[in-house]
Length: 370
Image (cartoon, rainbow, N blue to C red):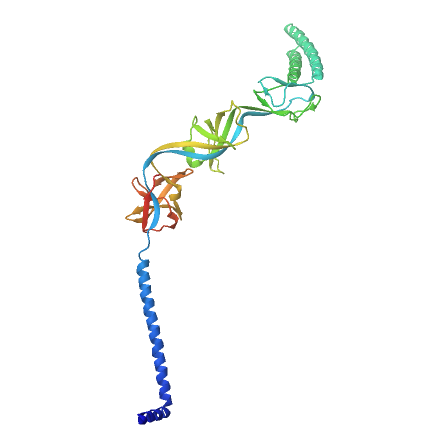
């Protein structure tokens, strides 16, 4: 034993480099084994994760069975409420306002005298014109007798006759001006705030007050040209006024004969009864215009529609997976959309979670009644 130890020490002493090399090789083998073991485990876990990823959990969605139904195709529009008749009251002749015969904000009748212009000067002119007319009439009568006796020429008689007609026309003109000093209401309605007082000198440019007929009101609105052929006179529309939920009705009575080339719209006007005075001219109207009643229409919730480039799509169920279907839609209401093509009665439409779905994605669904 002693001899072996001595030989071993002697060998180590003679070969130090070989021992160092052996240690390095052992360390390399050890590290390589650890790396190989780690790679093997990672590959095994990756394969396991891949197998697990291939089997995605199905997405929970709500669905509904597509059915045909009757659909009222209405067009929602904005319009304006206007007075049936409205006019600015002005005087046609200049003069001093002698008397005002209306109360501000009151209702006046057609033909009622609203105010009176002083006509003293005009009546003096009328008296003068009547005197000239009488004299001219007498001259014309005498000239006619002389013409019959051939005492004067036809030309002289024509001059006398023309003078008479001119004097008569002057009388009629002044009489007409006197008549205009009584300013009357052109129609029945409510008169607004007056801008004058008794004693005011007015001219035809001075605004006296506004007169508005609100017993009936005009509803003016425009529709897109693609619906132009669907609007007819005597059609009934429903509308609500600004800041009100009460519904009113009006009947279409006039349609522009052509489409506006700038807006590509057709202007329409309807007439509404306002005998209760609930509507005010100048306010906005929210209009529901009925276009057609469609039977066996396919109507789906708006949240089921997914906009895509060049159109729209929906998802239906197909053997436990989602199936992408392109659709063509038209009228939209607050909650529904009318589908023209792409869906058929009996399809099971996915109505929730559609933004996160992809074609052929696995799903689990619950039927929800619309």
